[in-house]
Image (tube, rainbow, N blue to C red; front, side, top):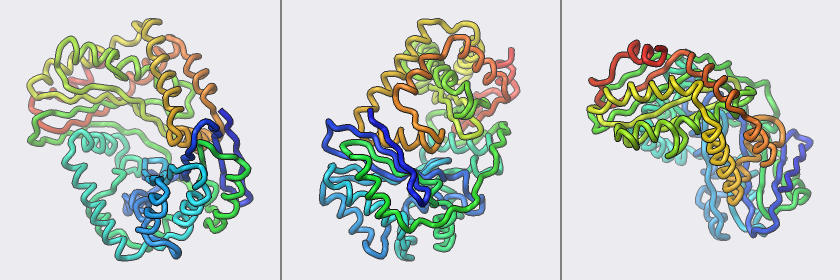
Length: 419
């Protein structure tokens, strides 16, 4: 792995990961901005901007942008999260200059025509409607909102239908000018790309970014509590959350391994005990979700309402007993899963580009694969039990959606976890 980084005069960071054995390059811009940077009155603007960036510039129409990429067999996509937005293209190595040109064009010169805004507004409203019709997505939005109430970090990434209906062109443009500035952007590429040549392309094309501004978002304030939404469904969807560590915390990798052991795969404790041995759920897993300054440890279970009374005590018992019972065998298996995932992800150029860009944005340093593997390997059973003790003694957050008459009250569940 050959990773190189250069900071341009305007402040844009450029990072490449050279892989000589492939014929393609995955490249993109990763922006250190997302839903948590929004004003709540404009919730959904980050996601709507992401949609609108490809809808036309002074040089290209929306159709010409995608046609130019697909004419050479490439593909383009984008996504928005709570702390990041990404625009990326995968194409053959000889088409790299075109890819950089298009990225620079859409990020610096998007004109967001009114007719395209109206068309895309309708698309996003459909996307919001799909989420409302997908309970195992909606329950996580509900959980996020109760965890971080009245905060942009707790707001839905897609926004709400009422706000999206009224989102103005001025609001979209102001957001871009305020946040899409050099210090918040990383241009990354992975594949058969030469760093010096890529930097020259970046210097030539990214010459019209808006000036950096004083930006910042409000610190996360984990509140917790309960959200229950009765809905006529076949299954009940339950999310339990605990206050956890940020991605900058020394306990971060221990929390990741804890999640793997407890609910990270088919060999995990929750899957084996709740699903395989007792058949009480169709789906159950845990997940460590970390932000710059905060984190959540989340457990999800999807089950029929008749099985909830049996399932909840078993789930709570598995959480309680993990401190003091983790074995070296479990630790070794979890590390092997994480190691294999990291190594196998190296086979995808887009995954590699995503990893180096996100690492630079999140940690402001280059962490290659071996750095990450060393940090995973250094975690001990004692480290995991320490972070588990920390996480599972924090305030509980519960979000539940579906038929919920058989789900015991919040205080009873808290008592099961504390007993």
